[in-house]
Amino acid sequence: MTYPDKLPLDIKPVWYYADCFPANFPYRLISVFLHRDYKIDMHCHDFYELNLIISGKGVHYTKNERRETSVGDVIIIPPGTYHGYYNIDGLNVYHMLIHKNFFNRYYSDLNMLSPFSILFATAAKRSDGEAKIQYFHADAADHESMLSTFCELDALEKPQLTDVSSQTPYLSLLSYTQALILIVKLCNAYKTARAALDAAKGNSSSSNLLNVIDYIHLHYAEKITVKDLCAVALMSKTLLTEQFNKTMGQSPSEYVNYYRILVAKKLLTETDMSIARIAAETGFFDNSHFSKTYIKFENISPLKLRKTLG
Image 1 (cartoon, rainbow, N blue to C red):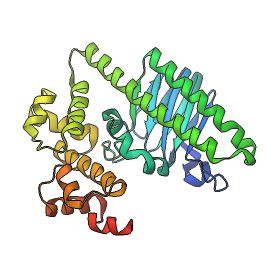
Image 2 (cartoon, one colour; image 1 turned 135 degrees about the vertical axis):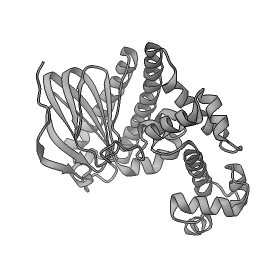
Image 3 (cartoon, rainbow, N blue to C red; image 1 turned 30 degrees about the vertical axis):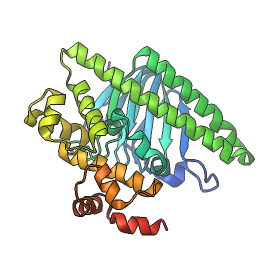
Image 4 (cartoon, rainbow, N blue to C red; image 1 turned 45 degrees about the vertical axis):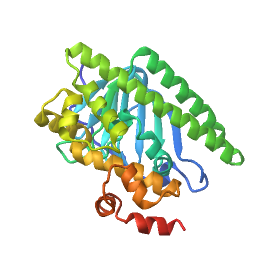
């Protein structure tokens, strides 16, 4: 089977929010569509894209690599990463484009799912400096389940695109709900795929990394040491740090603080708990350390954030 070593730059190499989320559709935070016999040269976009291969065969390209794709493959492309497709035989691809405001609304909730933390880890970089594209192969049951939700989203969107009067908050909220369901299904499919891959390879490294993230999500309010995480991962400190950095783009200790701040932000904006109590509830044992860490991640102090909320 022959196909090009590389793809040329597309006639439209960069896609922006305005191209896919038009101003006359203010509630549109998700865009879903099906491309048949799909091919496109190298391009990037400033939003996340989720692809599900529903039939046929093709090749997915990045700047420095190419990968054959087939039914059941899932590809998650982060903002700013160049990629393209070459159609070998009837490559049909479902796309979901995700507006940044969708993640602004739901990120802290979705991030409770350990696979989401990996699949949408924007800090993870490839050797060429671009954000890392995530690939995995869903089994038949998970593929069918995700395809069903894609079809429901597609059916919700089509009338809104052809009739402006049908662009209502009601339909948009239904779309958000289905998109959340799809992402949850995606996370479940990823976990299943990693376990199957580990079983085939005779090790449990992928599943153990998910277990480490789950452990952090459950015990963030407690003292967490690298030794604790090594015990969960069944890895040495060196191997865990290497695998975690490769997958997440940060060290285990950095991720612990990142997740604590994520929870703290949710508590600051959604509850009336005192800042001191929030610090204690999220694993910080004094306000000064909490404030410094919060500023590092959010560029604003907890107190200033509270003041902006009135």
